Image 1: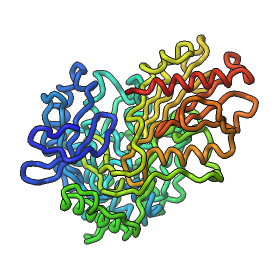
Image 2: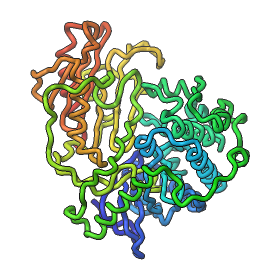
Image 3: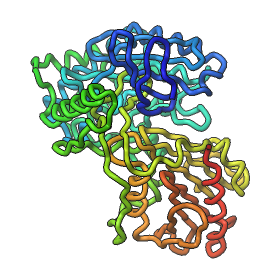
Image 4: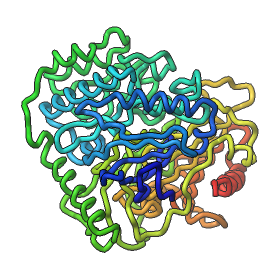
Amino acid sequence: MPTEAGPYRLLTELGSGGMGRVFLGAAPDGRLAAVKQVHHRFAAEDGFRTRFRREVAASGKVSGAYTAAVMDADADADLPWLASVFVAGPSLGAAVEATGALPAETVRRLAVGLVTALHEIHRAGLIHRDLKPENVLLAEDGVRVIDFGIARAAEPLGATALTQTGWVIGSPPFMSPEQAESAELTPASDVFSLGSVLALAATGRAPFAADSVFKTLSNVVHAEPDLDKVPEELREIVARCLAKDPTARPTLTELHGLLGPVSPAARPWPPVVHRLIADQKDRLEAVLGGGGDESVAQERTSTPSPPEPEPVPAPDAETVTATAHSPAPAPSRPHRRHGRLVALVATGALALAGAGVGTYLMLRNEGPPDKYAKVPVCEDAAPKLPLPDRLKSEDINVQNGPVTVTRCSWYEEDVVANWAVTPHAVVRWTLRRTADTNGNATERQDEAFDKEASPGRRDESLDFGDEAHWDASASDRYCSLNVRDGNLVVWVMLTGDRHPYGACEQEARTIAKTAVSAMPE
């Protein structure tokens, strides 16, 4: 781990995102900061430093009360970095997980804060482009919006939301229709995302989320959301924000008028949220006051942390944990446990503002260490697999917090990219990293795998991995093999004339073994 970035002393790694690694940093004056160093691949790209410098300069102009300010940056360092204000508070997504749908007046207060934040961001000449619950923090005194503008620096010249090979840039459930269709973005795109965020806050559910990326994007572009559970006093406002036509959405100024003023409050959020804030401040104080000694960090049980957010699933009706099916009852065999968690700071409750991703202080864990740190991309892994040329436009690489998914698909040679066409082979890598208080990554992966495996058929014949099972739903129609190796799950699906049932199991085992061996060092 690096020890410094410019004048900032790096205390510990907090996590990683699509653009880089994030560290807890200390400024020379003692202030804490979220310090992000970008990945090597971006630093080496033509034009990246120029774009990074431009976006940092624009972000530095955003100084509203509802955003986290950029403190410093260096686009010319070996690895460009950016430091921004550290904000304590759960993300909106974590808060909704913990409390359920928020009260109408709380949602209205949230809306006013988000409109104010977006006004500041737009005034600086930026479009947020990725307003989602994980980029909205509920701080002690109000809302904060993070991760504005900087992610655009990672896009090559001329790239749009879905055209950069191998990556989904943005969050499909909260994209605007024009972003989903790779059209030109305007501030109205952020207004649409605002409507989706408010709908989630008011109902507990994202209005366009589906069981695949493509279905979610189709919903965003074509489907009308069900807003019946949105409180009546907010329903029309949310519906107008979610207009498919950007010109039909209200401006931020109009939204201010529609929402009206909110009363001042010393504790603006529901009690559970303020308990989360206090709990995480106590833990951070213990860590810093104890010089990082784990013995001073005690487990807190009064307010359990919400589960980590899962990434957007890959295409088709698949989850990102282990298999293509909903969780089944836990198996009879006991889960393996590996020690006690020593919590430093809870996921979702001490988020790092404005560092390019919503990231969180890492957990020190006495369970097994993560066997793998990252998954391959299709460009690197697919040529190693005993399969014909894949359809590259269908490559997926999605990261959300501590979970990353890569999915590669193979179609018949004469098939043109078509979402309605079924691939004859799919290989998916799902990696979970230890990065939050929900537990050790290997144990979490083990638990999820066992729940998915119970209706299926265990395979004890493999000479690699920790455990494996075949999907029960495949029946006698196709081969669907899942293999867990530590904190990694590999899924292989084979079907069609190329892989007839009754002859595809050994092929699936061979492909799965090769996929595990293709993991980056």
